[in-house]
Image (tube, rainbow, N blue to C red; front, side, top):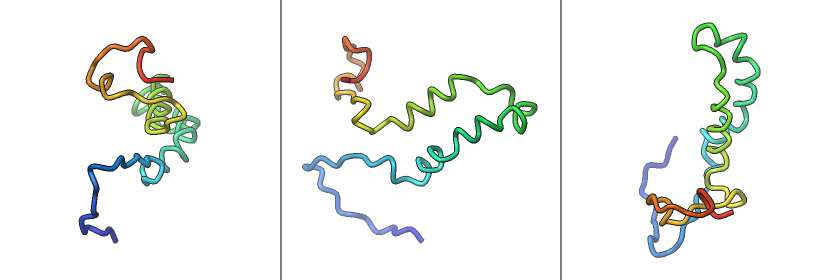
Length: 89
């Protein structure tokens, strides 16, 4: 059962994201390659062919929050152009 009690949160202290602990993240990480492998046999007739951009979207989702893949400063998150084309690498 979920604990619905509010947790103390100190807004003055940086709280790093931990995307890898969510059930959704772990499910996607564990099974998206399996989905791609069976797509044509199970789902293509109903939903169409496997679109290649799906893999890009999934990898970007999995890399989001992992500082090994860079980060976007607050200015860039607000639409300020950067020379690196996105985050700092």
